[in-house]
Image: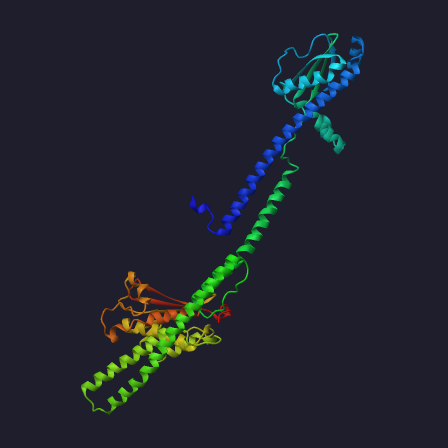
Length: 476
């Protein structure tokens, strides 16, 4: 069930807002419903007390016969009014404390008008045995809105509780009247449900808009951190906005500055070492040239070449992005063709593609990247078979060889500096362990990637992917 839960902070906040909104709506409607019931009950008791006072004041001075005539004239269903020698409420025990208090109030206020006793009861409506029939005028087209509301209200009165009161005069005659309770309409109706739904939808939409505005700086922060991984010299983040965001942006900018300083120090160190080594190496080479030909001279020359190659490889590894400035538009097919031209160990598995495979980058490091990959294939497989294709957004160069491949658990390790699958220390068979590292670092600096995969038929496939120029206009 965890996959049903949101995975991002804005989604969680939105879920909490919606849940809180629903909880508040339910609680509010429950409180309103309870308050309406209590208010209606007090209102009904007030109406009962008011009606009792009006009728008693009207009839207390009249004779019993006159009271019956007046009662017959005032009795209109559902407000039934009668005068009798016996009370309509036969029991003297109130239903609850509320009814007992109401009886005491009536007697206390009407004693001066000859009232000796009062009884009040609340009764539920009696449901008819047969099917209910709607009021016919409700279905007529000529019924106006006001009349329709009145008819609906009258129908509601017939379904509501009734209050029955029996009041005894000094002469023993009882005044009995019935009064329907005020109908309690539902809190949610078809008419007001769209209003509640619209209000809730407005709150949710406003919350989504505010959350997007609130989290926009953090999306920018995420993009900036990803950009730093590709280019340490990218522009620092603006330190403005909320205090939390400014703190995060300041921390990212500090991290970027320290990383840039570390990388620049490494590049300067490598460049200084390479520069300082060139002078003594040149002197050694000149002195070796003065020696006669001998096996010792050849061995020393080979050792000297190894030292120069190591120095050059370390410099290339330490300065993968040594070329600054705007990226150049490079015809990638021409670049590959110039590297593999007249090399008998390189073949194309497919017809040469048409020109127009353009990427953005710097020509020297990109040439070094392709050269390293091709030379690795030749070194370990004897022959490099190249395939060049394109997708909607990328240029794809595949390099296949017939070598032993790479164990699956070494696929990621071979990209580490000075890591070689071949265990010997011989440069001719194992290299320095920097070729793939330099190639992948260079590809990533231009928005690309280098991946390795063992082929089912044997050998290794190296795939170099670079974004096409039209998709890289913002890089640089």
